[in-house]
Amino acid sequence: MYKIEMVSVVFITQFAFIFFKYLNIRIIAKAHVFKSVFMTFLIQSTWLISTAIGVKAIWDAEVVIIIAYLLSGMLGSYFSFKVSV
Image (cartoon, rainbow, N blue to C red):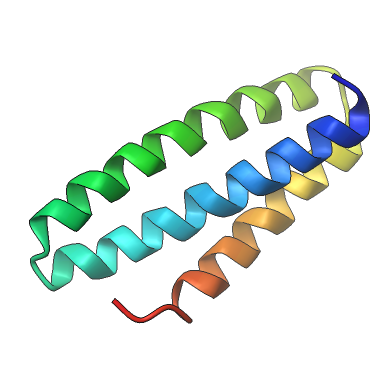
């Protein structure tokens, strides 16, 4: 994978991971069991991909990918509170 592709994949998966994680917390608080189980699947899938790329980026000192990982996590957190449950 080229660096721009890695940045894109880590940005999207990390954003989705954080977004789904916080959205799931809000869903659990409202006791929606099916939605919570589905969100858990999405959380695990996106976490696996974004973490694998993030760890490799740290190992290879790929600063752009590391920054994309961190920024997309912050954006995912922000936007998860903008969605109604």
